[in-house]
Length: 492
Image (cartoon, rainbow, N blue to C red; front, side, top):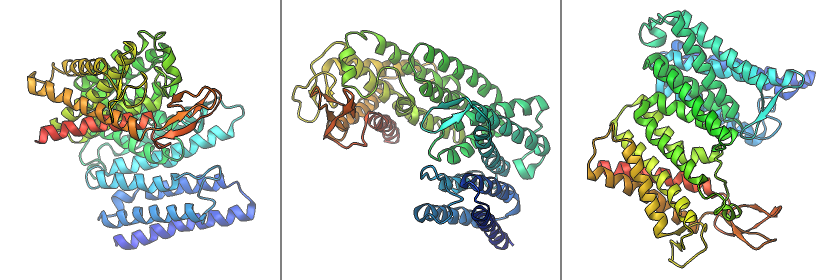
């Protein structure tokens, strides 16, 4: 019976796509209209799948089938009414991919999370686009590449809120949907609906290039699992308040750009909601102290602004490069609370701090660095340059990170040294990549070697490294290396 249902579901989806294509050609509909019809219809069609199918196998096969079909459609432009006409994105591939991930994680345990998350994507994301495009003079904003509207984001919030509110109200006592009887009060249901809708709406606002089709369902599932199944409602409520304060204050103090503040908000919610103060204090220590130290001696280091790709005001990519690995580890901890993950988390934050402090202290004290690959003297600020003063600064930063966790981690010399060592390894990898693969350009106007692709109002020439290896990529590898080092030390 499962395979018959699977075949009917696939045929039904293809039927909707086919009818949409025919109607688009006959009535000359805007392809965006038919794309939204397919978007909504498919989401509604897979909504009951977790309770209709007894086995996970045909559902996984369906998801994999449409990942392949949608990818080929994009490559060969088969279903023009299903793909975006503005530019090629892989949003139609991310859609079934998100469904596949949810099925693999929640199948048999909490099927309601799969259904609600896909319905939020199907209805919320589509209506956000419809409202944003349908009103006159929308208030637009652009955080990562796609223009969004305040009105569209408001529609996203409202639809997401209603989906969660109605579904929880109707199924809260159903063990077949949730795995047990929830026994939630109406006030708790309302609060869960608000927090989930707010988190998802912020994710949608940041989404671009089709990635919202992947991250909206995953964000919905994360919040529902945390608030309903793990029962961290009060902790997440405090996390939302703290995250809002940190992001707004940091934006006003120019520690962060607007999209950097939004990314910090999401990261803070994930970290505090997943681990509380134990997880929040170390990364908050890194962020506050690193932001402050970057402001000290700003005039002295002003000349390095012509060299460094980014300024001391962090954008979303800098936030994710330094804190993204920590956020992913915290998210995993929310589902699998193993203590080894906290150690990896500290190691990742230590690496980010070691590298940031080494750079800031080295340039602040105007030390004479040497290139890590051959130890020849180079100009301060050169990618891959290391100095004794900078290294001491990095060690101090890692010590402060470990110290910030001593309320929860029993102090001993081995743990301190291992966290410092993880920070050192991360920074070493950062410097090695900076000296070899990170893109370096030479300005055609002033002949200065810089990390910036555009310099003196013109395009600079690539003289070393790979164009796709920028400072953010290197920092991301730095924090990942620190986390991996922490894991290896614990395992050994």
